[in-house]
Image (cartoon, rainbow, N blue to C red; front, side, top):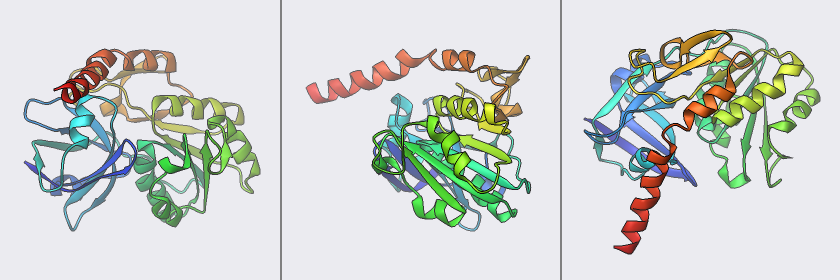
Length: 278
């Protein structure tokens, strides 16, 4: 069993969980993920690691509450335990001295982009961070991200902070910078990954996305997380999760992610209705 050291809803629908998992904390690198189960017979879900402490033996993840399993994780309290924390899984993000890097994050990707930005900064890169959300109250870890970034930009759909709109403003932000962007790294929902890749393509910027397909075992055995990259089929768990955003078959990925939507969302809504009615 893995003890939950801390649990909080940091902004609406985003929960930070810090778990005691020393074997993972010793080995994890930026861009990798863990697989969690909230209960013994529960679903296995992949979650990117947002931070870790090797000395304390803890790992922190940002969980977005969107379905029945994430709802169970979000309801956990500090001091309780879960049966499964498997990892680190996947390949680490490539961390080299590239020059000027733009790190784009949204929702749970704001958390998972942090260790990547930190490692890139430590490597001597100039780090530009762009955060996207529906409104300013959905941003978090501002202080942490400002510490590892040379500049932080914000995009909100309601114009409560920074640029108004969505990732369609990304080109405008890039053109306002003094230095050209040598590489872009994106973490977040599939729509953000696709939109960011679409925005960087005409600018000729190498773009790396952390894909989030449906996944079961996380070790390449089940094949559920297969994605099409260029003309090749890849497994996100063992070949990724990072891929060239300009090579991803986004239409296929978006369609595959909807496969179990009714099984996830309908039970979540139904159970809550029954609780209120009972």
